[in-house]
Image (tube, rainbow, N blue to C red; front, side):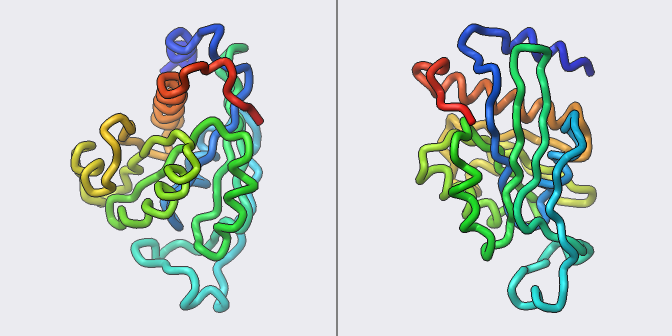
Length: 202
């Protein structure tokens, strides 16, 4: 699918030239994968191997095969022709690294919260954070192989989301799928801002 297809729907004098977006969610939901699959530059990753010191600290429930963890952030970039450049900052998922979120959130226009239907409650920390800070966000349900499938409205009810918050199904490994997620967020941010051209950018 051609990226230019999406540019036509977002071309506007109100669209900022650059924008910072956070990619958040629980441990192992696919944040690093999502940034890596869409970034047009080699993504910056701060993954480190899980060690014995993480036992009892980092829960690997539902992701027992995961051997690494993000300890700072992921970073990537995607350009929509010359109209819009998105800078993607993936947040660390473990609770012991949540203190970094405040710094990463500075200047962000919105966020994507990734959900895994096998442990959907892991989204609550990110949702609470963005609601508390007034940051627009959408839910991207990462459809893992073999994971239960639910309708978007069922996910909305489980996460007690407001009716206007978009819930998008995606595959974090697929570039086109991730593009749709980012476009959904940009549209949502534009719709929720009374004066989009005055949004603070990073």
